[in-house]
Image (cartoon, rainbow, N blue to C red; front, side, top):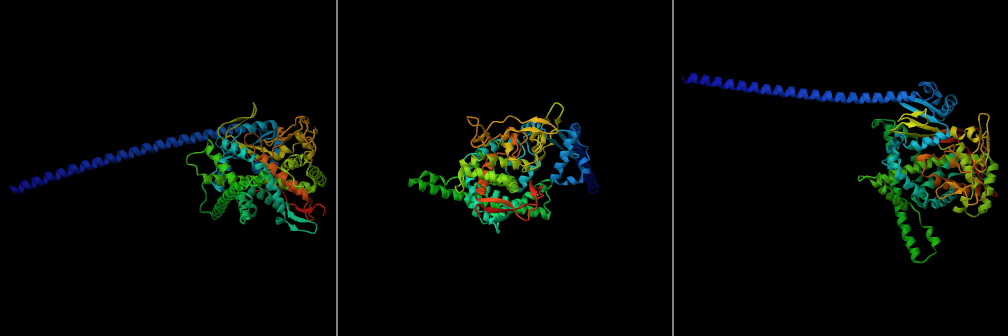
Amino acid sequence: MSGWSDDVADAWSWNARFWSAMQESRALTMMREYVVHEVNAILWALLIIVTGLLLRRVWRLLRFWVRGSRLPGPPLNALARNKGCDALDQFTAFLGQAHKDYGSVVRVWLGPTQLLVSVKDPELIQHLLVQAKDRLPLTGKAFQLAFGKSSLFVSSFAQVQSRRISLERQLNGKFLERVHSISLKVVDRIKQWADVGPSGLELDCKTASQHMAFSILGATLFGDGFLIWPAAREFEDLLMMIAKECCFWATYNVLPLWNKNFQRYKATCLRLQDLTKHMIQEGKNQHRNVIESYNKIESANIDAGIAAGYGGTSGEFVEDLIAGIISSKDSSGNLNLSEEIRGDIMGMMFHGCLTTTGIISGVLTKLAQHPEVQAKVYQEIVSICGKSATPSFTDVQKMHFLLATIYESARLLPAGPLLQRCSLKHDMKLTKEITVPAGAILAVPIQLVQMDACKWGDDAEIFNPDRFLKQKTVNSDSCKIKGDSHKAVGLTEQGDLVENSDGQSAGSDFKDPDINYSFLPFGSGSRVCVGKRFASVEMTALLASLLQRYEIKLGPDSDMDLKPKIENFTLQLFPSPKLSLVPRGF
């Protein structure tokens, strides 16, 4: 009997275990089916979202193609057929022919999704530069990759507007007289970059211009100690190396961290950032010493004019820069001030050096090629400040023919061949018939505009500084346009030119170049160069002091057939001419 009951108990136990296992299996099956169902639902949702995004992208691309195709211009493969357009200077020639064939507004397909719209008409250019406030995203990416974070050089104008106003106030304020005095000091050091020849100093025009521009801006931002800084030449070389490669590496959507060339480029950027950080600290120390010296001078009741010579060092600039960053509407609570300051200063050195190098090199070459113009500039300098007296800040502002010579050189050889803008979010309506789709690259071919015979006359390709000093009637076979009526002007505190109370300026009449929309060496509109007046004061002071001491001549081995080419984003004459600086009275 007990055996039978044991069997029954085993049967019930087995049956209980069986049903328990069945329930667990059914629960696992249901759980598995639930998971599969949920995963499928999520995958379907993701597929729908991705499909929607792709359709939205395709729709935008189709809309972009349709609107872009409505603009006049060569066919899609026209640029590919022109194998000679690999270089930017050759691309400018391609644009020149396209404007002749299709009019003042031309579209060029750079690729299936890249559209460039070139505008040559001055009135439309002014309208464009006011509306198109954003820079190309590639530019902002290139700067951040090379110099680190900097809100001063982002693509969106809305994010940088208040910072630009603050920086412009700094550059056009106390630093104007400082850059004037630094420019004079740099002329004293020109022998370091030249060889002593039989009749004077011999130097390479491009190299010397680069050294001068770099030294002036560096000493203005970092303090006088920059002129004797042992690492200054290394800093300059690194900056030029980065200028050659920054946009290339910025084209990568995924940075090639495994690439040895990219690793070398990043090491170069980090070294430049370390040097900048070191020099900023040195500038702060110098500023602290200057303040202490100033206080001693003030307590000793020494003449205020002597005390004034101690001001305006890098530390003061950095302090003003910090104030501008903190007060900016765009600054956030997570802002790294030291990184922001370093990025801003490196960006200003990059932009300022490249731009002024090209203009200074062009002016020196034109003066050497046109001794009659150089003689006239020298006469103006001597008539204002004599043969030996150091040109003062006020003296330089009176040298209108010198300023006209700089402008004329910048007209014939602008710092860059193209002025590029874009409207990232909104379509831009240029005329009733022409609407540029959002995302297109808007370009102004500065070379073509500043040498257009319809706006500058039959002598548009001739070096003639007088065109900025007197009214002219423009006669051309292709168009008959009278020059605008310009008033006589003088230099203002805002960096522009205005008429005097009697309608005449000191020395000679001067036409305000800003009212001529065909003159764009510093850009125009919303993104006009904030250092425009700063650069003008720098170059006029430098050239006034240089021409007062030396006569500039072409070296005996200089090639007279000079061609403009692009190097480091700027137009420069090649081969770089060799110059001789002959001391006055030699």
